[in-house]
Length: 265
Image 1: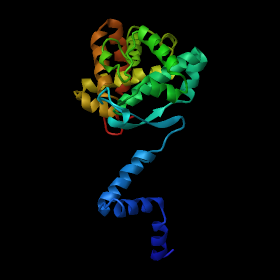
Image 2: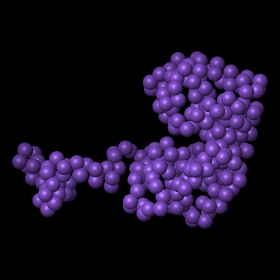
Image 3: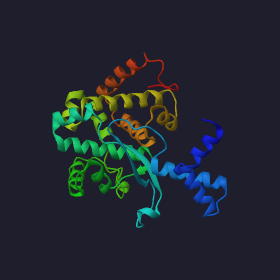
Image 4: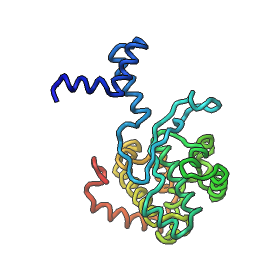
């Protein structure tokens, strides 16, 4: 295909038609038209990040967006949600039943939204999980009754009166519970329990090395709020048993020289 053929092909693409419309009908300069095209493609088609199986792309209100205005008038964020975590979700459903699985999915979606600078409503959750808002409200009531904070839109002011499900799991572990016991009590999978404990221990290790909260969050790919909550739990659970359990885990981590370096997993 020669240059002339390529030019004719490009002229027939939807992108070029859109650019022509911006330039000819709306009198936009070429560079402005191209910038509008890029923003429009990112908004409508995403930024090109591939989705993993079980993930979906949603548009949510940005964290801090004001209330009392129509959705089209507030700042939004493009968010990737893990609706189905595969084997981990299957484990929860098998051990605790579908209602427990749905509640863990709610927690995961709320966490993912917050980590990406957004906040979800109960309607957002109902739509993603293909259930009714009434069911989501009922799930919220159950989890809030257990003292778990739920960072949903309109509910963020209440954060701090309870603790996150991750913090609750870490507290149970520091109190001497096994992974299996915690999974049963919290209706999580053993896999997720282990992951939360490992993240907590890594936070403590990096904090002991003198790293600031911002850098710890960046290295571990978790929110600064969660880092602060883990460190608060570390301070509160200052018992011989908690110190022993933590020391054993930290000793294991010391055998991993990559911890705290760029690219650490």
